[in-house]
Each structure stands twice: as C-alpha cells, then as structure tokens.
Amino acid sequence: MGSNTHPLAPMNPWLWSQTLGETFAATLDPGGLALAQRSLRLERLLAHAHAASPFYRARHRGRPWAARGAPPLEALEPVEKAELMRHFDDWATDRRITRAGVDAFLADPRQLADAYLGRYLVWTSSGTSGEPGIFVQDELSLAAYDALDALRLRGPGAASWAWPAWSLGQRFAFVAATGGHFAGVASIERLRRIGAAGWPPLQWLLPTVRSFSVQLPLPRLAAQLQDFAPTVLISYPSCADALAQAQAEGRLHLSLAEVWTGGEQLSAQQRTRIRDAFGCALRNSYGASECYAMAWECTEGRLHLNHDWLILEPVDRQLRPVPPGEASHSVLLTNLANRTQPLLRYRLGDSVRFLPGRCACGSGFPALEVQGRADHTLQMRDAQRRTVLLLPLALCTVIEEGAQVTRFQVLRAAADRLVLRFEPEVADPAAAFRRTREALRRYLDTQGLGNVQVDYSAAPPLRQARSGKLERVRPDEPARTG
Image (cartoon, rainbow, N blue to C red; front, side):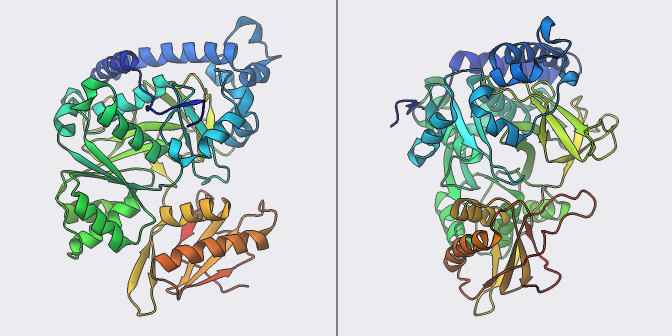
C-alpha cells in the first residue's frame, strides 16, 4: 500500500450527515431553498478556486474583476478536459495533489477505492471525447453524491426518503467496466467497504454489493448473476437490455425489485424490454465522471437536474446560451460540490434540451433530455451461426485499456466482420490498428467469436448527422474500404 493512500474508503460521517440533511431540505423546496443553497455554494466555490487554485488564479489574472476577488460565473472562459489534464498540478486547491502522485496511485489496481492522501477518492473517465480524464473527489462531493442517490433516485419529494427500507437486506449487482479505477466501480467498491467495515451507523443500512465485469461473455455473466441472486441490478442500458433479453428467453432467472440504468441514453424500446422482462421498476439517472449524480428520473420518465449541487449551461457550437426547448451542441458544467478540483464552466460533450414548463410529476427541479450518449450493441454470429451480442461499453473498455487508443470507431460491416476507423488526431493509425486488432482479437476469442474478421478503414469515423458527435460503436459500415 502506497504512503499516499489509506485502505479505508473515504468517508466523513459529520459532513455526510450534514449534507444529507441539506439535500433533504432542498428536495422539499426545489424552487426556494435549493436555489438559495446553489447561490451560496457557487459564491464559496468561486472564491475558493480563485484563492487556492494556481490554474484558475493565472487564468483570471489581468481581468477587470481580478482585483475584487472571485469573478461572476458567466465571466469565466469555459475549460476543456485536455486543458485541465495539461495543468493538472496547478488545478487542485489541495497543493499536495500532483499528477505524479495520482498516476502512481492509479497504477496499482489493488488501491481501488482507497483513500488517496487519507481523504480523497480518485477515478478515471473513459476517452469518449478523445481525452481520458483523472478526477479527484473530495469528501463533500462524495457526501453529495451519496445524498442525491439516497434521496432522489427513487422519485421526487419527501416520499423518496425510503433509503433504509430499500437498502436493508438488498443485494446490488453492479455490471460495468472493471479492472481499472473507473468512476462506477470505484464508487461501488467504496460503498461495499463502508457497508462491510466502515462507519458503524451505516453498516446495517447499506446493501450487499458486488461488481461484475461487462467484458464477460453474456452466458458466463448471466450464470454469475444467477448465483449472486441480486434484488437490484445496476448497469448501462445496453447491458441491462441484453440481460433482459436473456431473461425473456429463459436463459436467466432473476427476481429483481428494481433495475437502475445510467451512463448511456436509455431508449423507449430498451425501457419497455427491460421492464417487461424483469417485471419491476426501472430507475434511470444521468451522471458523468466529472459529476457523478447530475439528474434523476421521475415517474413521468423525465430527468430532473440536481440544480442545488450543479449548474448546467446548454450552449451552441460557439458556446452561446441555448434557450429552453432547444437542443444544445454541448453543455458547460459547474460542479458545486467539489472544491478540491474545481470544475467551472467545464465543457461536456453531451447535448441536452431543457424542457419548458413544470413537469407533470410535480417536481420543481428543472426537467431535461440528454442526447448523444447512445452507442449500439452489435449482433455478431459465431462459426456455428449463433448470435453473440457485443456490448458497446465492453468493446470500448477493451480498446482503451488493451490498446491505449481512445479516438476510434468500431463498425459492424457484417455478422462476422468488424471495421476500425480512427480520428485524424491519431498520429500513427497503422500502429493503432495493430494494437487495437490484437486487443479485440483476444476479447473476441473469449466471446467465442474467433471467426470474426477485424479490418481497417482509412476513412474518418462516421458521426451523427444532426449533432456531429462521434458514436464509437455503430452497427453499420457503408462501404468496404481498405
């Protein structure tokens, strides 16, 4: 165990209790108290970032408001992930946090969910935007994410205060990318540790939790889930949909109280298939590695923004504000919970549309739609012509971790053929293809798809027609190219 880590997952009981109370009160008054909390948190965050982050202080130097202290949020120039990664050592307000120290911590998979520097949880994001990220979560941000999941994931208002009831005796199966310090698996492992040996008042409240790798062949994953017998399944929509298909066909027999999905866009067809197959409620949410709990879904199937803990600004291609009812090109995120690695007007690649008017569910939290996060499950055939599903999250993780490539696209050209394309920023596409093909080859063999051919195309990746966003896994490859 490294000297900068602590084996116990980060947890501040006093801060956790305080944050839970504040979030509960805001849940009851989203139009009044929640907005007042947001204003106060923003004021404190801006002042702290300006005073304690060399990156933001240098960025603000020479501006007219610099001499007066913290600037107004709208005056700040948006930031990109690549810029923050380049200036990592100057970004954090805790000056002990360095890229070298964090990299050493992340290099050891055994330190997953350990408390870095005795108080932080560190996780990495995928490279869906072409640039993987490293994010340090402080005790306040972790407490906020816990409170938001506990109080709002199951619906609006005071009726959602059922956390002990739905946690006590429950068994959570989390199916996602494992093998690295990813946000989802790090969060679940932290929860498991707290429940097993952490803060005593939480031990009897928290569920039994186990993680499962999305890279497992679906029959083996189904068998492991069957042995664990979860009451709650947590995964990406594409994975939950594939498991629902197995359930509907009699290859899986789970008795679930709920299914929780997130991380991808949930389609109406996926929602119907998952609900019908498992015969239970489905809870969908919206989050990111940069801010783990951003929005929750109400009984009307609409996402509601946790606007007491974050600010989202929908913008067009020129980063100008987009009015309610209109889909944005991108969105600027300000995470009000994390004061250690401040995110001020941070550009996310998501396209969102704020819905005008009040939602029929009665919640006063803003309703929104999130677009452009849907990769596709690929239907392949093995040598015996049996259908084998390849999940987009599994494919992306295999390539990112096995080939160290992030700017790619996998296209299904036929039931036994995949085509790889790379973005122009990839310096040596031929070398990237060799590494990616080798990583995919190993993975395809584990899925019983040794017959599947992996080819290279020099053409640029296909993009969504309206938004221009990259889908890294697609079911079509229009022309056979070299």
